[in-house]
Amino acid sequence: MIQISDALLSLTLLSVLLSLASNRLMALVKIMAFQGIVVSLIPLFLEHNDGMAIGSILFLQVMLLIKGFLIPGFIFMAVQKIKIKREVEPIIGYHASVFAGLIFILISAYIADRLHIALPDEHVLLMITAITTLTSGLFLLMTRRKAITQVIGYLMMENGIYLIGTALAKQTHTQFVVEFGVLLDILVGIMIMGIILHNINSAFDDVDTALLGQLKD
Image (tube, rainbow, N blue to C red; front, side, top):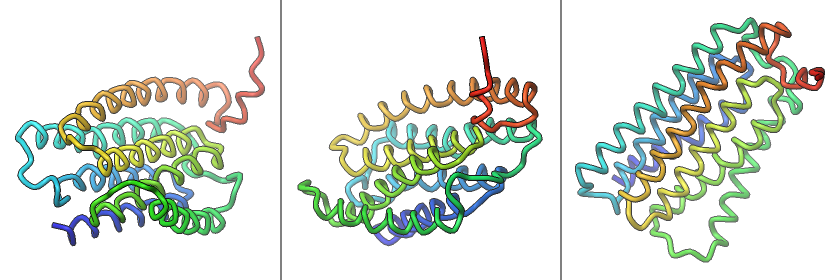
């Protein structure tokens, strides 16, 4: 089980680096769908979650559906409606972004080592992955101009928060209840985002959030 969880965590880190390196919006959506599926499966293969209750497994299936299919599906439809298919002028370039992602991994390892929290051995890589995903999502949110990419950064942050909760949660069932409520809020936010993106694209023929500064009363 530990080897499978380590493989899933490694795939999560790989998806983070790929998202930082990609400029195609469709590719970003697919990467986030993949990351959502992998992140949702991680709790199933952690040693301390062996023999999970049926209710917890049901929550995992629902979160897998929302993270891996429902939310990426809404973003996919939003991308299809806009004319822009790639992030052309990021605030920080793609090579520098990947390098920043590698730095985040090193910093996350240092933070996980310095945290005075009694974590099981299998949770060390989990905490490193969680912190890296969270900080990389924030980085993506702050260094990209397109609204779609910023929303993807926000979703990546949510995945990082979910992994942190997985590492620290004492009661898995309680963690899933809280996460399910958060996911419902995000799902509503994604639906509203689709409407806003459509209006921005209709008004400006672009979804660059810098254009919002041109709005006047």
